[in-house]
Amino acid sequence: MLGIIADTRRFRVRARHVDFHHARLVEEPTFEAAAIAYVEDFPLTVDAGPDISVIVRDVDTGQEHCFRIDLETGETAPCR
Image 1: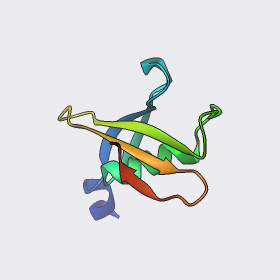
Image 2: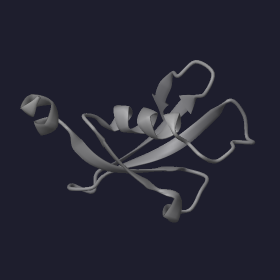
Image 3: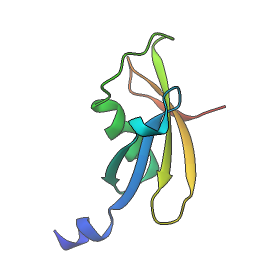
């Protein structure tokens, strides 16, 4: 169990189309896993279509990535 905890990182994740105050702190091993965890509990509706873009920021390093997630299939890809 200690190995799992040591591999976990803290990320602040938010949907690209909403303000920062809707961000959520997520603990996951990777940027992509944090994006998916956020979408699984996403409380806001998405009117633009079958996908959502989320911005994932590493709390400790400030490094940031954007992912587009297909809400029907769960496929994840970098934002364009």
